[in-house]
Length: 630
Image 1 (cartoon, rainbow, N blue to C red):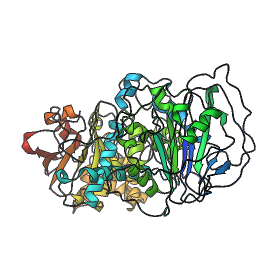
Image 2: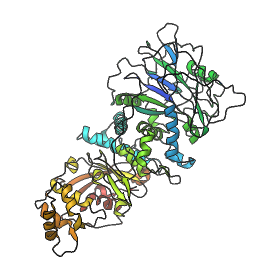
Image 3: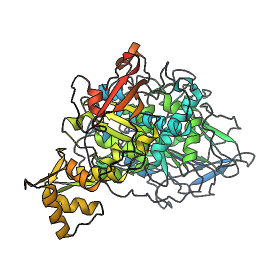
Image 4: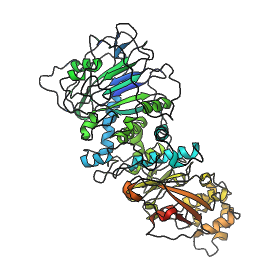
């Protein structure tokens, strides 16, 4: 875990859709050799939320499969292109077939490659296959079942705690209700998505198949909201909405898109949306995700007749129970075959979606689908541009831990690979780090080991919450003491700027750097004045200027915004690292000692890590239990 650079966030172009429209496109990631489509002349446009399903086929097309002509002449290359619509018997609602969003399909392929490399190891994939689950004894603490997904879980936990600290002052963490914890989780996820600084949120969703047409858990529900601007009730318990409506007759024709993707693989897809005039009705569509998408299977999707599909029993992903939990016995290939995406223009719509489809977060793959959502929302081009070097996968192929680029993306919305401030020139290469103050901080034990240098933007975040890194795991440190992140005093700014010219942490700089330091602090930096100060600060002409001498000269009345004593709390999501194998928060009382000297105690790694932020800190943990960084 170590550092990389800045740059302005790129806002992705806005696709032409209704301002409050919801575009749902399913995606496919495995190889398929048939490119087929049937064109349908456009009949009408829809203004209701847009639903698009795209199957990803993993098997080659059979020799008996009839190849259809490729779709052409469609306006708009992705979701939102006009297709054909058929009105229902009463004329109050219809189905419109549209061209699926091929861009999403391609980007999901690229994201899979970026995360896992050339192949996904099944044992590593299983370690990442978990939902967002809360502790039995600490209602707002997420549980991490195995090593690896802390690169996502710890940042999510950090944002959740940030919301509690800022919006719920004085609340007792143990008294937070289960429903409120779910609401806080959704808010935390939306905070992370907001950091991507995009105009459109592309949320990844995993399809579930039911064994019969009447199963409620095997449906994908899309509701047309009469008031799309209404804010979601984030404090309400998660729920799934479903309304039964008269069956919609299938259209006379179907449209299946086939398009080449990288490596010769192809994907087929079907797009179905409720047409204008549906009012507040919700269309429940049983989605049968087959090995191949054919005109017959399209009819099955529209009719909700999954039992009629010829491949309804192949590679099925069945629900375990009424809560919508997914079958654990699914391979990484089957997982990627069942991904699709939903587009939102408003983060409040994302929150509403997660509230009404909470099982997508709590099921076996909740962590993975959210991670894919962040990458897709950010955009693969921007992600790879920030990373620079994509030769190694972001998830270690053997140990399963996440790279610093993945951690930084979750914390800041940028996937830079380093944790120092701005750019650093290393051997002629400009390596980018953190470009601005982050909402959530980051400190790591690896800095004390001289493997990296964490910059001020991470050490001094906007809110008193820090992700803490060891050599194997990520945990979270937080406090209710908001003065820990109060604006810098002039002396603290001076100390930070001086240390930025002292990357080795020696507490001195070369006397030739004095002019640059003074200029960075907007102090007098004329050559004559600099020469005078060099002689004054380095009377023995050793060629170095000590930090203490510099501070005494330019900031003699040093003040400190940080209080001398404060309370800290620590979270570790691994049950085995907690007392009684139950994930809980641990409380401690911290004190900042006089002077800049610090002791390195290898038997107390958590204090050693804290000293990279507060060099002279000591802490006494309550109940005599010292938290673990691993």
